[in-house]
Amino acid sequence: MSADRQQTDAWDQHWRKYAETNALNPAQVLRRQLVFSTLDLPRAAGPVRLLDLGSGTGEFAAEVLVARPDAEVVGLDLAHSGVEIAQKKVPSARFFQQDFSRPMAIGEDLLGWATHAVCSEVLEHLDDPGAMLRRVRPYLAKGCKLVVTVPAGPMSAFDKHIGHRRHFDRGRMEGLLEGAGFRDVDVQGAGFPFFNLYRLAVVARGEALVRDAAGEELNLPAQARAAIRMFSVLFKLNQRGGVLGWQLIGAAREPGV
Image 1: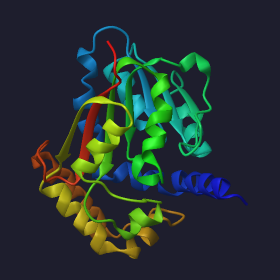
Image 2 (image 1 turned 90 degrees about the vertical axis):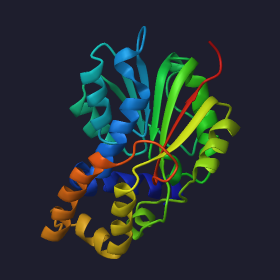
Image 3 (image 1 turned 180 degrees about the horizontal axis):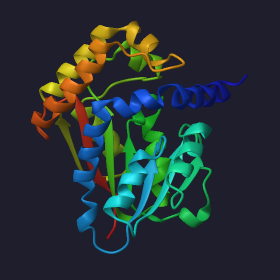
């Protein structure tokens, strides 16, 4: 079996195994809030055509269409299972399978199409994230606003299990976006202090979290569920910008008017 096929199969299994765990994760809620705030879709003038790079099972696409019912959404994800779930969840959007380590395989009708783009928690999985960003650019309209999230801070056993190659800092993220040709780059570190504490708890949980999350039925201990509820409340007190948070959120624009 090829390495590409193994990677795709792994992500198919990921969405089947971890969809429920993912839904409970307060970090996912934090990221979506940060992305929505940065995109500022309700105030976007003219049509909104959003390209969701790493669309998962369609949660973000569904929320976009609540905020902007007139938006057009196209989602791309490595996993066939993710695409399948997302299409059922958000039938008015379009979802395609795409390996971001390879040339883009979506239709030419999408060249220069996107007025907005999101790439959330994808780049840390790629050996060459800059190449992926450069391959995406032809599908962005001039002036397209790109919002990116990536993890900072230490890597957990669970991060390694799901294929994180690296974590970032602000300077590295800024250099990556500018090196790919984007302009007006701004990277912030969100989530201080409680997101950082949450990440340290995940690191401390080690391999046990992999076993808890990957069972046939979700089997998080009561203690872990209580911690999730606690952090869901504490995250409301996090700083939303600054330099200390371990959730990086970057904004940039495709050059042009």
